[in-house]
Amino acid sequence: MFSQSMLILGTGIGMGMLNASWMYGFSRSSGGALYWFVSTLVYSLVTLALWMFVFPRFSTLPAAKRWLAQWAIAIGCFGVLSLLVVEASHSVFGLGRGSILFPYDGADLALTISAETLRRSPWLFAIMPIIPAAIICTIGFNRSWWRVFKLVGEQEELRELALSAQLAALRAQLNPHFLFNSLNSIAELVRTDPERAEECIERLAEILRYVLRRTQIDLVPLADELRIAQAYLEIEQARFGDALRVETRVEDATRSILLPGLILQPLVENAVKHGISQKIGGGVIIIEAGMDDGDLRISVRDTGAGMAASVAPFDRGVGLRNLRERLTRRYGDRYEPTIQSRPGEGTSITVRVPREAGA
Image 1: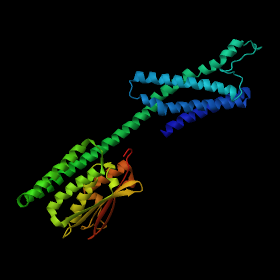
Image 2: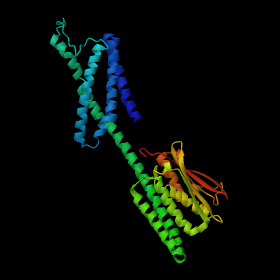
Image 3: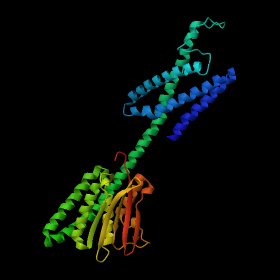
Image 4: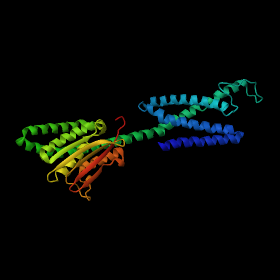
């Protein structure tokens, strides 16, 4: 977009300098040269404004109607502009071309140019540039600038499709693995604690409904993510018993903030799978959420087994790797999750999410 803008402005400046040089060389009038340079630059700026802010508004119309609407607007804009430029040549630059508002009222000149012709000359100079300027503006937009707009839109669509495909891959990986563990836990409880088994089945159904319902929805409130993470942890607590304890420290103001769906669940799953389950006696999972320099900060800490410095946490599981790629593709590398871990003491993963527009 920047290069396109520079192309228009550069062309306008070049043509303005050419016209100014021609005028000064022909008449030795510095005022006339300045007039031609400024007027040509103004025409270029109006063209740029039409291409950037006005013509794209007709993008949904059929080609014929789009061209006709853009043509009409260009005629109107350049018509008004031409009238203003002609008046400026008389009142600002003091050129002898006459004025539309104050037409020539003297006698005929010795050059046999009639008074009537002189009276009409401002209109002539005002009308002459309208048609060619409108043609260049309309054709240039549809043959050059419009293609840029379409390419930008297609690129954004491809980006959204990539994010959706990545989230779908995460669901495809997450569901069988999670279902396998959950069903095993429920199967054990059916014999020993039927009521607890029934509660786990309800939690599992809640999670599955959430995953299926969010298939076409990108952003969700943090409160929803917390609810599903809690449902997941309740199922795991049925499996681990007192060896798994959960603490939640969430600022109330953050619960309504929107963030990409299925961000929190991979974090708590990692804490259970690689932290608590690997440590004799289990441990505690602490979920924290608060605001930090305008961003939503979410951290999941566990007092589990921890990781050695040589371990690459994002490479050992699909969930965390998908999480990192989703965040960096959507928000940039500065929003990559951070991990701190010590063997035997536990692991802490922190995620930062900027406030979405309108959130």
